[in-house]
Length: 280
Image (tube, rainbow, N blue to C red):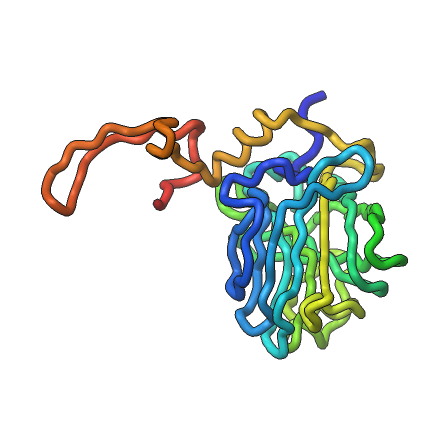
């Protein structure tokens, strides 16, 4: 029946950039491919790692650990993003809009409520729906599941731009609270992205947060996680980021022609077609 999991690298297998990055304050892709830490600089200093710690059936997880507590700033969230054209089969903006079910495993150093947001971006305007999930036991893997109704209002774009943002909000000190939590589809609202949370990851250097086994599928039922081989998952990730070979150990090289003392011309072959024109 084809691939069912819309999430790339949901089992945190692929980490082309690094398996550990310490002491960062700005947002970025740091370890596990396709997983972005979206944050203000003042929401704390963090270490991100690809961990060999996961619930049964998985080998890896993504972990963030606060190393310097935050005191201000609007946003601190872990995100993964889907291209618009990869959500076209959901028929959003029509009466046939399909329900989708999200499941994931999470491990948190605190108990309480956290908020996850699904943001549907489109040229005609963005939409939002949210899920409040409860951490019942600290430092313990727990599986969470939610079904989102199809959005009958907004037609998605059919291109390679951002279609879905799935974000797990960790903390906010301003600008992301003050509105009611959108448990049904509504207009994108910044002040509703952290409104339902009682846990704030980044207030203390004892704060940690981990995730793995993320699956987003069509339908109203969470099914078993779809495992993909490392090679297939790597190829999906390389559409967005590809690490070139180096001369270290003569693992590989590209041939360039020295045009001047400051410029060289040459060719580099990408392993798969990239989403858009890449930057170095």
